[in-house]
Length: 296
Image (cartoon, rainbow, N blue to C red; front, side):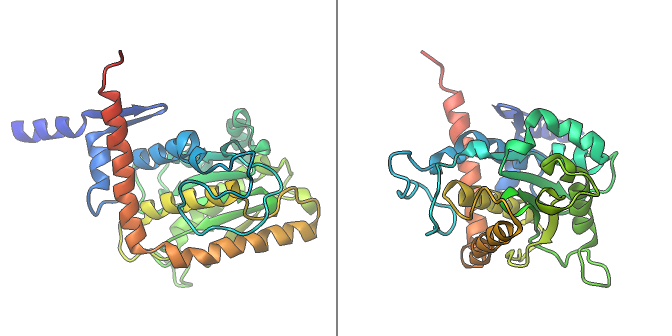
């Protein structure tokens, strides 16, 4: 009994306090082996992307055609009409997405208002298929829901759409969670009413058919991290049109975004996912090392 108590306490030791995210040993250990990622690891990576990771691939103002220093997906040859930055993007952690899923649209609008979602081009939601509102750490599958303003679509990236499927082959739990979230946040993202129409209509929910499939039962969270980083980079590096003002522009924006989605199958492989686990772990270890160095 004493050994188990000490083991539990060891797992709860704090490893890194990174802005709004606290990582403990038991969180970080999930990256070391074939483990399902928890909320804290996903939240850390989203926070890291927002504060540091995406800044590394922003294009310099003086040379908008220059490639970024680091690449995490296929390069785009599309023109960049203006300098895009990480400030165009909002990444919402699992806890926020979970709260929104279980909120009516009116409450979701109030919750998101301080974040000014109407000023963002991309909004990313880490989605857990947990249907139990009283069990915050529940669920068995991660997916990613991305609002793409130029096409006014909420794009659902699911690396295992056949898991826990119903008779129609549709992943009932993850698709249901994404649908509930889309219903809750739609008005807040566009300012549209339920009976609205035209360009300012509610976003269309799209199940992305080009999403690569995981080959095991535990890597869904890492696929979420990989796609989150990639879609953010697509925007920062200039993929797709912006400032859509009509239905024709909206359709063009979605077609150009589809080009990037189709190319995911060429680089988002099991080997890439395994490498990303190691990369995130190294990012955490590097921050821990820097935090342990006393300031002069």
